[in-house]
Amino acid sequence: MISGWRERISAAGTWRLVYEICLVTLVTAAATVPAVAASWYPLAPWLIGLTTPPLMALRLINPPVAYAAAALVGLGTGGQSTALTVVLSASLAYRTDRGRHVVAGLAFGWVCFAASVYWEEPLTVEWLVLYSAVFALLACAPAGVARLVRRRRTLLTAMHRRNVQLHTRQGEVARQAQARERARIARDLHDSLGHKLTLISLYAGMMRTGGDDREETADLVRQTSAAAMTELRQILGLLGPDGGQSSVRPLSGLDELADQARASGARVEVVREGEPRPLAALTEHAAYRVIQEGLTNALRHAHGGAIVLLLRYEPDALIAAVTNTAGQRVAGATSGQGLLGLAERVRIANGMLYHGPAPDGGFRLAATLAYAGDEPAPPAVEAVPPGPDFASLVDRDRRRSRLVLVTTALSIAGFLLLCGAGAWLVATLVVVDRETWEAARIGDSERAVRDLLPDPDAASTATPGGRAVPGAVCVDYQAALLDQVGTDTGEMIYRFCFRDGVLVDKQAFERTP
Image (cartoon, rainbow, N blue to C red):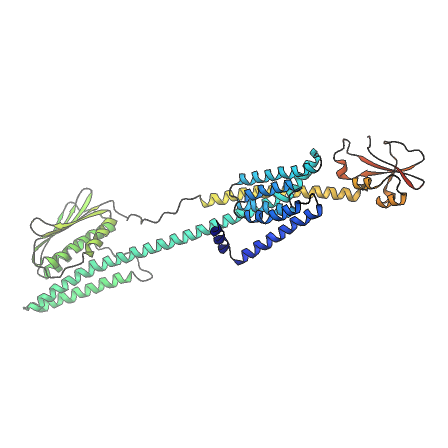
């Protein structure tokens, strides 16, 4: 537990720690000083002073428990401190997740607040309403404001989290797009340049062996090199700012592939079966690359063997295959990355790739491409963690914020209206409170009593009611507002009777209508 507290303190930071220490000191002083002045009983200030700091610290961990404990302490010390009530009410609303827990805490605090008043004096309905208004200002208003602040910060946090999430997802999508583009360019380079370089290697071998056709072979080398450079420029052009998709190689170019291979001395046959039909660009390009890769591998690893380029139009799929018989290897061992890239290209075109040895000792490479594979399947993107829709979250927060704002505004407005009405009555009416009436004692001099009473010009002469005092001059004052709350008629009168410069009688009665 101690280590947990240390972690919390270290994570809070220096300034937050200084703020909490100052706040605890101020609230403790604001709660203890009135308790000393009130002198409800000798241990009350000590109880308040010793319990306030722990309650202030507990509000950071468990606000409902801290609020309930403070209400119980106030119940036993003549009422909870105003400063402590405001701070704990705000913490209860701000740090508690569920609204019903906040309402339950405020209800429990109101019960304890009313009970502490009832222990000091009888509590009528009028007094209960008045003290409830005071509690609404001291507890409900700060709680409402704190709840609004909490909802606003929750909304801002959700917006920040969503922005970070979208930024991360956008970065991931960009990285995936870059990886796909790089893989596509690498496959194009391998398929195109690999085939051309294989032909150049075979042509160079023919030139080394000599013969009358050396000049013709050199022309083939130059043509093949020029074609390779042209394709290289096309592929590298995709890396520019205006680069698009790679150019589609039509299947009508199979005859050109076969002629280039025959020029190197290979025996190549092109076989077309079925009724040709229009193909999607992705399907046609994949079929061309399959045949090109198969022909390149056959020239490298089975030179001199028979090579068959097959293009078969099935009712529901296109078959592109290259079959070769055993021959002489003219290249070293390869890494096999070309077949891996080719398999990915065929998969994107909604097809399947097969490669393996043939029964006669040769090799077969074939791809089955569905006609429906017009567009590649969308790339898999990391799913966003489940959570409430952002628009609904904003709308719900707006509705709840309006409700809390209206409730808080009505509470504050009602209390201010009540205070304003009381101030107006006190200012417009000359009244005498209960303490002044009790301070005046029969037998005191008239001057001493008059000094306790308001302006004598505002006093009225004896009104009907009360008892008569022979030979005395009586003046009547209306009782203070709080003294009239518990009366039946609402008109309490304090009467002072003087004779021979002495207070001979005083009365308190209700004026009859």
